[in-house]
Image (cartoon, rainbow, N blue to C red; front, side, top):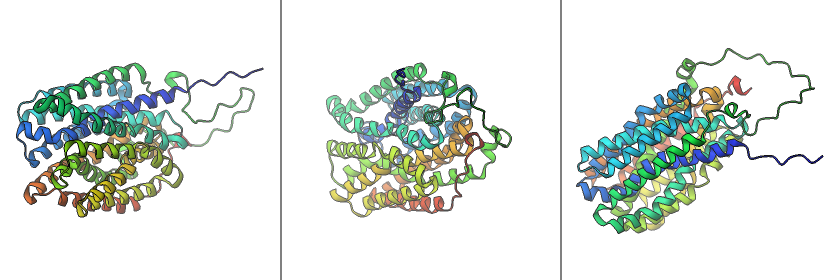
Length: 421
């Protein structure tokens, strides 16, 4: 008798939709700002401090929903929260493009951040729940690659849009970003499912059920079921969050001011800066996959240490070697590790608390990450205006990333949740 050909597990479809959610919620809503920033500064008369404040407004909005978004997803289901978050982000981007003052733009960047936090945090936890423990790091890494796809698309298209629409180009970019995000919000609502059980499935990579005639294994002794309070009382989760602060502060400085610094410090044109931005995107395309798999093999702790050290090296090169070679090597090194830390954090939260509470746990540690993100751009903008250079801020990012490596090295090994035993 010929066995039927196995069908594609729906978990892979959920993962693909997760990539698209990250593409919109982080790639367009956050990293699009880096490409559009020089043109926005000209259009709205912003200095570097004001440019940093706009980025910080966006990240404060993200911070407000980082913990709440995960908790809402655990209560109402990630699917609804993710779709609503993308719709809010889309509205925020469109209204950013229609802004006529710095204050107005800051308001709508904050709204965009709220939508990003409500969609990005839950989708990472949702995807983690669709994959078994031994594949969770890989799945989280694949999901995070949505940001890489965005860098590639943005680097190729934004300079062309800015050129085609002249001084209104930055407005056109935000309108395009918002329209694409709204389409993806509708797709997310139609395609995503909260848990494998909702589709009558087991997670991807989970062992098949034993045949009906086989004796069931003895039930293991497990502790009481975990509740929401366990998320916020867990010392291990708090430690992860504190380490996450360093990534939020350092990477957002680099990403927000990357294009602006290339143009100001290296004499790059918008087109040339966009090309290096795109190169970074290509280098980062598989970084989440690679480092998620590495963390599956060597543990979340040591993977975090290595990644932080590589990123610290990247920022140091940008700050101390402001040449074509220095900028290029810096971009490549960052690209090779760009989204690895969020992927590892998502996997670690699933390891500790299981798929049901993973969105809430990830939302809680993302609160710490958000504090770092909210501070980074404003601090860099002030330093850049005070010194007349973007290089000191990059060196500050390097120092903070090095502290992140130290903190990660002090973490205790992750204890696997009873749900995964």
